[in-house]
Image (tube, rainbow, N blue to C red; front, top):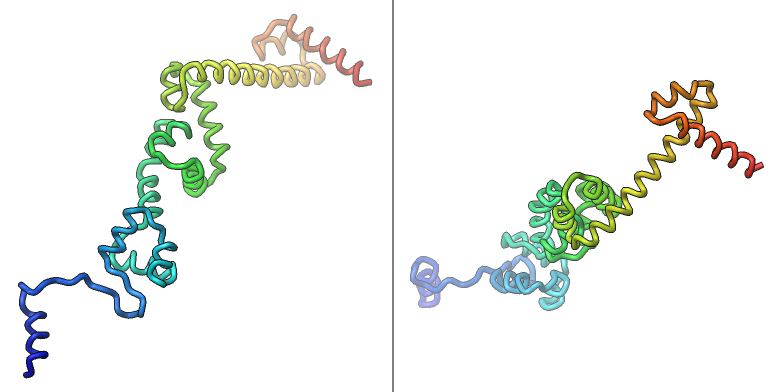
Length: 214
C-alpha cells in the first residue's frame, strides 16, 4: 500500500479525523448544507440562491429537501397551518391577525382562500358582522377585530341600522303579499306581532308608490 492510499484509509476509519460538510456531487452544481441553511435563515430566496451558485431554482429546492431544511415560505405556511384555525375559532378579524403574525394581508388572504375555500373579503366581512351583532361588549369586539372601541361603536350603529332596515323591508313585502292574497289584517297582525295601524300604513305606502309609478 502506498502512502497516499494509507492516508486516505486512515482518514475514513479514524474517528479523530476532521469531519467535512457533505456536498452533493451528483451534479456540477453544489452547495454546503450549513451555507444553504444560513442563507435561508437570512431570508434569501431560492431564486437568488440559485443565481449565486449558478444553479436553477428547482435545484436549490432539491438541496433544501435533501438536507431536510425549510424555505421561509414553507416555514410561514406551517406557522399559519398551526395558528390560523386558532385565530378563526377566536373570531379574530384581519387586523388582529396581522398584528399577531406580522405578515402581509395578501399572505393571510391566500391562506383563507386556499383552506376555507372562500374569498377572504367575504369571509372576514361575514365574521365581522357576526361580532358586531353579537352580545359581546364593545371592548371584546374591539380586541378581536384589532381596532379601538370608538370604531366598534360606529360600526355597530351602522350595522344595526342596516339590519333593522332590511328586516323592516322584508316584513313590509311579506305583509303586503298576504294582504293581497286575501288574509285579514287581524290574522296578519297576529302572524307578525304588529299592530293593524302598522299594516294600514304599509298599505297606504304601497298604494301611494303604485300611483307614483303609474
